[in-house]
Structures are given as structure tokens and as C-alpha cells.
Length: 80
Image (cartoon, rainbow, N blue to C red; front, side, top):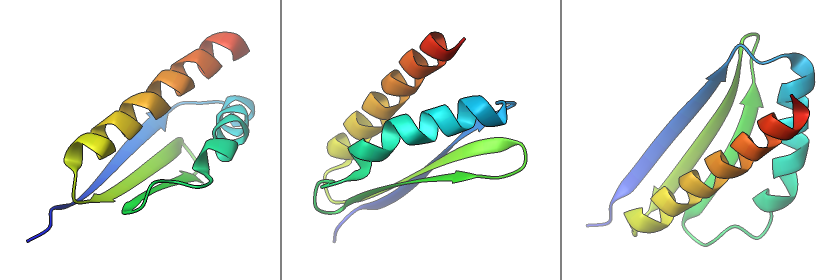
């Protein structure tokens, strides 16, 4: 049996400009993703939503989430 996991992270109360900066900055990292792992960014009216999905090694998924959130934090500091 293989473990499957889906994690959504919501970044609330972002301006459209900051949300777009984050999306554009993270877009190049969303290429050649490891097998059995996916990352999607969506924007709704009030949030930027990161959706991570992984199958198998949960540590790889956790490391990916951590890396994306660290990069997001840097982007927010730079754009403030």
C-alpha cells in the first residue's frame, strides 16, 4: 500500500501585487518536479492557495512544502 497525501496551504489577505509576485517567483520551480509529487498555485478572491500532492515518501513532500514556504517568506520580505 502506497501513502498518498494532499496538503493545501492558504495565504490570506495578500494584495494582488504580492500574490502575483509569489506566483511568478515560484513558477520556475514548478518545472521538472520529482516523480510522484505535484505542486499547484491558485488564486481566489482572498487567498493564494498552494496545493501539494505526494505519493510514497512523505519526507519528500514535507521537504518540498518547507522549501516552498521558505521561498515564499523571502519573497514577502523582499516585496514589503
